[in-house]
Length: 89
Image (cartoon, rainbow, N blue to C red; front, side):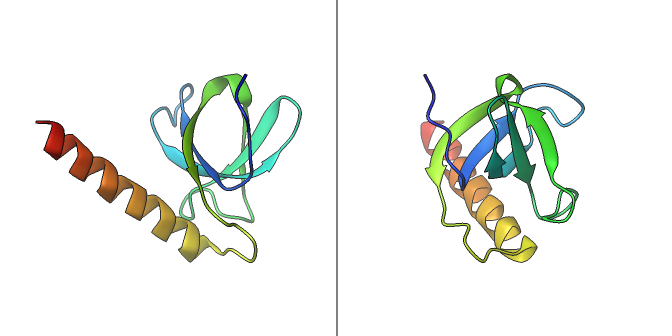
């Protein structure tokens, strides 16, 4: 069983946004609400079923967060992911 928490990162597994990384903003029983700070802002969250999302075990504090902070979190994640891939090669 996965443990869903606000502030965790999540990767889309299905749909036209497959492979995109988001921050979990809100959680319901079967769905999550996601933001990436660009196309999906805090005013226009992406609603996605939990089964179509893969959790990334990285949690961030999202109290008083804005779209710029979300973009920064995701950019930092992408940089560390790229570095890790380069080290594995």
